[in-house]
Image 1 (cartoon, rainbow, N blue to C red):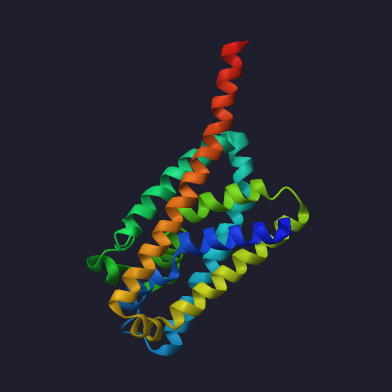
Image 2 (cartoon, rainbow, N blue to C red):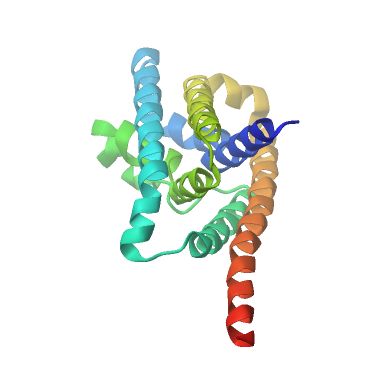
Length: 214
């Protein structure tokens, strides 16, 4: 595979597992159980569109924020790796993350659940935001940036389709299938977390060793 294909696969895998639309399905169904198909489709579409532009915003402005606050990309990689790992642990145990809305809070969000908490932070959570910033930093060519934007669009399109088809997918997978899928995604997220952590830690350690030698 060429470099662009490998990069595209990495972007797709990381974003799809971190956004985890299959894991979001049970909450989405609970929050929209009183809506008809038309309003459920509108909610899923609006949430996916908002999440898409939010991810792009952080992808393009993340580096500017780094420079403003004096944060290095490697430091963010380490923090991102820790966030991914904790999310992966949560998913590996087949339970929803702590950022998900509680059952008792659903009615208070019903007026515009497509923005909060569906788009943010359920779809576009800290993991997806961190991934967007780091991946944009890795996209060092115009072609890679185009691939990144296109793949993010594809992932959010799939997220919309999965959420809209949530009732059918849930019935097809069953309770056991949903838990197995979430655990599998959790394992992938943890592997990505380790890669991110050490890719950020290695340059920092090299700089420390060089400074110590000099």
